[in-house]
Image (cartoon, rainbow, N blue to C red; front, side, top):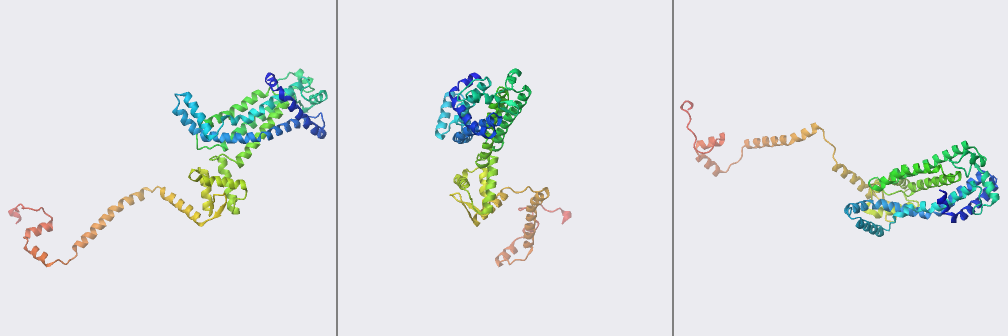
Length: 420
């Protein structure tokens, strides 16, 4: 770790200068040699760095969402050119260029923090060894060596020997307890951040390898930081715990205010927006109007969560306009009710066995009723033309009997003498 930190020695001077400036302020409030003064100086350094990295964080969010959208297309390219790796790479780069996506953008905040992290590590290691570094002179060096956080010196590590910790005027037990608690908190905050990202801010309708990678990172990163944390000084643990808490809060804000389309977070956000819009009759904030404007512009390409929001507005008697505002409309309510009725007709309820048997028996009953009515009609006396009566009178009696009895036409067998 010391070798890696020495590679970033060029940035130790600005890092030490920032810490000293914050120490002047907090030293005036809490005392120059206290752990609060030096600890809060490190926390303020983290806050300053993270504020400067906000544009990179926004770029990371956009890149991550673009990668989520492109996952189905990327998988199709991999399946299509699985035997030709060179063509597969070319098609991937072409897809990234067409969509303006940079896969490395999601790593930019971590990469940008790395120099500051190792520079701070180098500064604290020098303080532990009693060496001047950057703008930290002999007086500040002695003050930093005397600073303790809950009984643990800023420059002490979990793996330090008892003699080295005694040289910093502290006990090995207190150092191990403080560092162990901070390592657990650092790993837990890392796990919670990844978990809320996976469970709330991911479109679960699209199953992609990206989701599996995120799930693996959710378990691998906390374990990795826990193993590495035993080699970090207390001051570096303060730095990393602070940046994890910042990331967690930043992620919660994004989930609540700018969720991923199709995720559970978007469903919760649009339900809150629907409730406030129905209660007030308008979309108040400009940012919220932009959200509604984007949903309206999508048209038939809306996801299930966005269609649910538009349907909720229609049921409440509102219609979303192209500029992101809403207006009252009785037609929207009728269309919503009509759509619900149509959905019910398309999915009828399952009938019971008795009803199905009754429905099957109904056509037979109707046929029998038709036959009965036909027979009754045939028995009724009808007006027959005179020519038809004369022709009927000229026919032999056998024909009449055949017509009445329904016997076969043609010559009949003579009856037996006994039956004459």
